[in-house]
Image 1 (cartoon, rainbow, N blue to C red):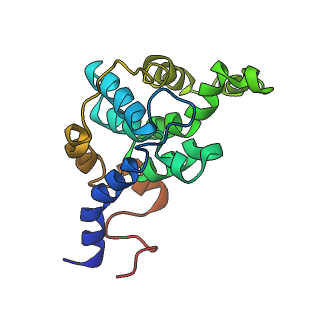
Image 2 (spheres, rainbow, N blue to C red):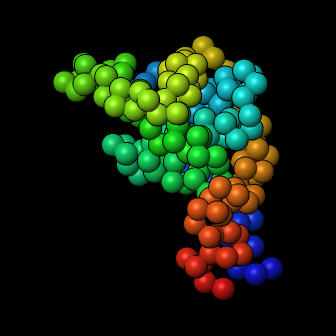
Image 3 (tube, rainbow, N blue to C red):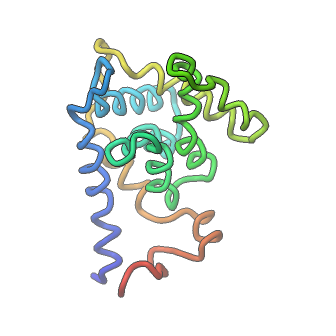
Amino acid sequence: MIEQDRMYAELPGRVIDHLMLLKGDYRSFPVDLLNHSLQAATLAYTAGESEEYVVCTLLHDVGDILGSLNHGELSAKLLQPFVSDENYWMVKHHGLFQGYYFYHHIGRDRNARDRFINHPHFSRTQSFIDNYDNLAFSKDREPMPVEFFEPMIKRVFSSPTPEFISRTGRSKHNNPTVEK
């Protein structure tokens, strides 16, 4: 197995390991960020969202471990090669959209998201916040376990999207950042 193949085969496991770092991280929430992520993904799954969308929902806060202030951007960068542009944009901007519900309490503009009001993914991102992210902080909701989502993660991370390959020229076997 060439080095790149090994790297891609191990990537889903590394993503899951990183997701597990959210366990025990409560911040000021009633549930830890792992439970929150699992709740959000469970809600998206039971609502019939696509597998890619469910995985994006599950991983939307993984960037919080390294950068709370820009966690959406970090999470989105992890997902970018493997998901559609619309899901990438949704994850990247979800923190700003979430701010509508609390920015005014900390002296920031709660309507900061409105600068994107004409963006084609505005409604999708707002719907993500309203239907999944905001509703996933319940102590009383039992989410599906990580193991339920593992096959989905493996499938989503199995290969870069045609959009990504077209835009960057990078694929599993044509990646200048990975030594051969």
